[in-house]
Structures are given as structure tokens and as C-alpha cells.
Image (cartoon, rainbow, N blue to C red; front, side, top):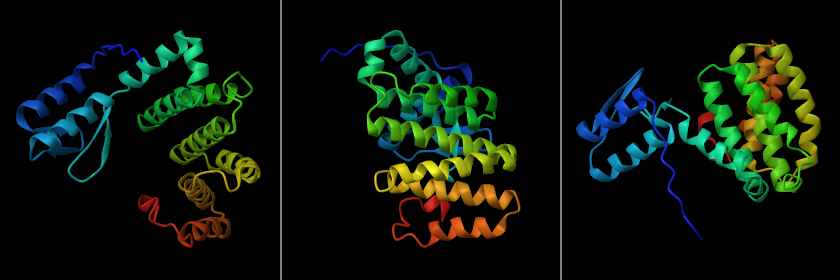
Length: 219
């Protein structure tokens, strides 16, 4: 295996956060702060900043940049054989970029990425079941989240009902964590649209699941 280091320049604001954290073991964020107690914690916090985000002292995530994710996608796009060989990683890279864009409120760009993920269906390397499940999960959850964040619940219901039909195709194969996330998003969309009985149905599927430690953030 050959390894090749690729340098990625951080945006100035992210670089300032990194330098402050490294020098002072503390960094002030837009809506929070993070301090670290020892060298090991500092190392992991600096890695988080380099990767694009950082958790503050209240465990709230802050998106700082998407330069590393963009660099990975550029590498895969420029080397088509890698994209085919690493199809699942390619989907995950676009999905991570999409989540960053959603967090920043750049919904039109996020929708473009969702369209890219869906356009991959049938391409060489992307026709394996595990890759198709990844495409279905990441595109579907991202589109639901955009509808939820923008308050477009009518569109969200149309998306949700289409996804419900497709979920049966992956029954027993989709990871339980993803399944619970779908149920939660369905409940949120129906609640936002004022369809409380349907919202209650889906939230009960989350609350009554016997693996409720998988996503404690939605319980």
C-alpha cells in the first residue's frame, strides 16, 4: 500500500480556532466554548477542528469547515477507478458534505448533493446491495431533514410516504440506528404538518424499540 500526504489549507477562522486551542487549551466558539484538561484530550480536539468540527463543553457540535471532505471528493472524482473501488466511501463523503451544508443552511447546495447520490444508482460499483442501502439512507434522511429545518412539511410528507414504501425493500438489512432515525424524522414531519395521530404512531415505534440506547439523542 502506498500512502500520499495531501495538505489541506484550513479557512482562516478555523485556523484561528486551531491555533488558539493548541496554544491555550481553550477556544471560544460562536455559541459556546471548549477547554481541554490534558495533552490527550487536546490532541483529539485539534483533530476534530482539522476534520471540520468541534464539540463544545456542553457537547454541542459546531461545524467549522468542509475543506477536508471536499478534498476527499475531489480525489475520488479525479480518479474514476477509485470511485468505483470505493463506492461506499464516495457515497459517505457526499453524505457528509450534504450534512455540513444542511447545518450551515445551504439547502439548495445540499439538494444538489442529494441528486448526485441518487444519480449514482446503476453505475458500475454502485449496484451492490450495501452501497444501494447507503445511498437510500443518506439521500432519504438528508431530504427529510431539509424539509424539517425549512418547515416545508407538505413536501416532507410526500418524501416520507415514498420512503416508507421503499423501506420494506431493506427490511432486516438496514442498520437499526438508521431505521430509528427514519421513524423519528417521519414523526417530526407529521407533527409539523399537524397530523398528530400519524406522528404519535411513528414516535411510539421509536420509544417502544428494544434498542433504545443506539440513538439516545432522539429519545
